[in-house]
Length: 245
Length: 365
Image 1: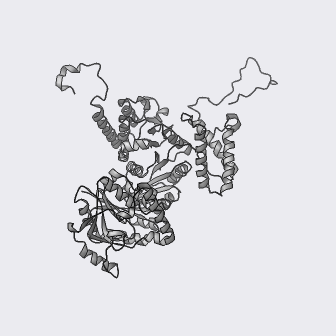
Image 2: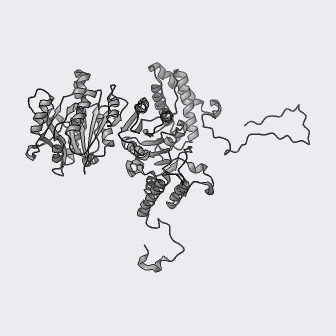
Image 3: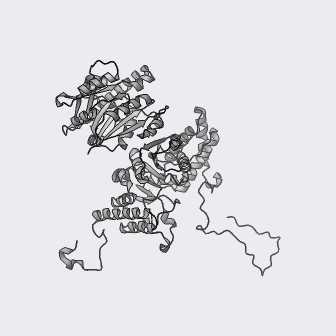
């Protein structure tokens, strides 16, 4: 029986992490393990994870998203791997639907959900007032339907679901993109170059707060970072990542 | 030991031979002192050049930035490495000499920079890290980590199963530690295997969290592994007793080595900490293989990895017949032999020169 390894990198976002983990515990029916990778948080993240008996990888400083994910990936033992931002909240049937899309065909590499806040085709618009209403909407939306799966050229890293086989074939995230941005574009491109397809599941809606980690630091820094990594992607591939969005 | 010069003024009766009692010169009876204790004045050993170079670099470093002990360590490791490699870094350099030179360099650096820190400089070509499984003993863990801290390690992976908050805080307090907390208690071997999975370094040192070992001794494991060997074992064989006096488990280790045609390894085994593995060994064996270290030992030899030793480190007592761990150890060895039989055939490359098996026809495998 396959198990899913859900890897959540986090930095100083204990409240977000708690909300995320609570939703995973509530709405995930498949066997899973949670691996929290703490990027040197200064709050009580580590102590909370200890109390909650979660698997925790505590890094000495903030190494960014790719390095933290890679640590979690190395430790994981599940056949299905989920990289999840800490500022997400999952919903009923989220993993079941994503998982069935992933296993629908041998050439499916990475699948992703739709959400209220993401760049590209994964953003959908369902008006809601608060999280409870969002959950009710999601429950209605998250009815497994193969017709709602769409092939795309890129999936946002806020929720990446892929098979261990893919990781064994194409490797880990590229750490040059630390602290973050465009490592997901890079991974998606590598998957496609190896002949794998990417699917967005419109029957899996989850909540995403949106750039919470980076927002808390300052938006000027964030846009500089995005620019720098954009150039790095272009230098690596001689391709424009924005063409795949 | 300088011979005491007898005073010529004293009258000595020719008939009486004075027997002076000298401490025994036998190396076996004298406790081994580390290179740091046998410190000769730098000028005599000809390594004053290293001290002076260290002093130069230390002055330059102090000029560029104020430093904490951690920054000092980083700076010393980096600049010592450069100096050692720059002078046509001799790969076959003697370990004792290399360590001594490194210490002189560090002493000069610290003297000039005015910042002091405990440090064990080892010139490594590749990235190194350490893996520790944290038991319950916090004092021992603290001592172990304090020794690891002075080595040029990229990261120290500490694996703890259901740790207390104080144990976690202790581990977390170390600057380059990656602490892995598992929700359930695990066997130390499995804990170390998981830790090995986590690190991507080229040389990985495995130490026992319950048995602190001095940094100088651990440094040698890193040095021997760094690009030279794939598996560096604790050389218990250099101080084993006669066969009659050895423990049962030591005999098992020895028999495994002999059956794999590695008698030179004597009683050494991968199931004894500390040991070091290269990236090639880890990739070839798989980190999971470390959960049964004896089997990993056999696999390493079967796969033709370069297996050697990194000096003698005194360990805790090994399990014996009456011990509850004995069954596990025996079972692990049986697994190792099963693996070896599968690879090398039923006679494991030992030809039978006495019997004429051929007459049995197809009954002979």
